Length: 51
Image 1 (tube, helix red, strand yellow):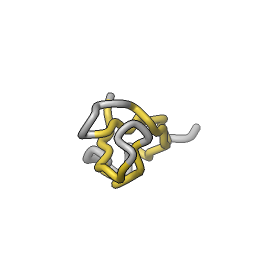
Image 2 (spheres, helix red, strand yellow):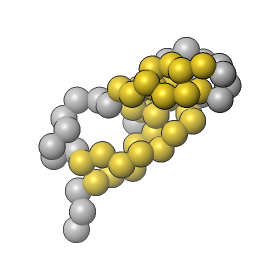
Image 3 (cartoon, one colour):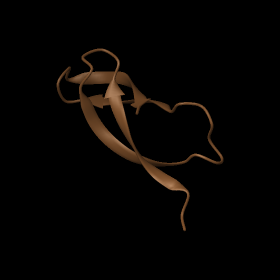
Image 4 (cartoon, helix red, strand yellow):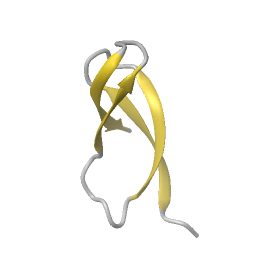
């Protein structure tokens, strides 16, 4: 069985969920933060992992 789980990435600026990704929780313990394009803000923003 795979330990990868589906996570949601939320924009820190407008709080909209625009991306989904997979993360291996055994190898990456902290919450994921990626700089991605937000369609609502129309600019690159930091997206953080939500529950």
